Image (cartoon, rainbow, N blue to C red; front, side, top):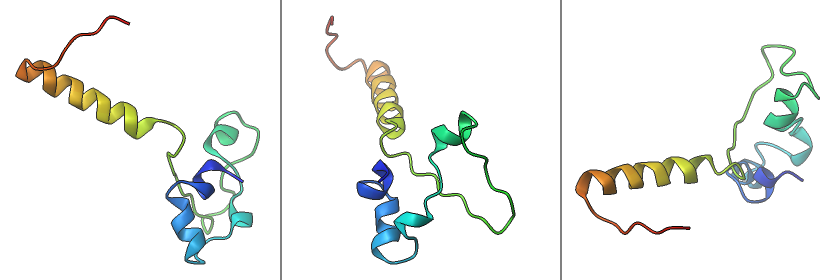
Length: 79
């Protein structure tokens, strides 16, 4: 089962019966790598669930960092 069906936003669609786990055809990586073709007709839908991709985390962290720099707050830590 995909991460999005277990913990992501897609789980809500599954719990409400709008989508079945079996309806999930591919993950974005499989499409990007050409392992599976994308939509083959206009009736098919695409759901993008960024769970597990850290996309929101990175975006949020970047905004917080830029705001902290702008305000001159925070502590620089060498890693």
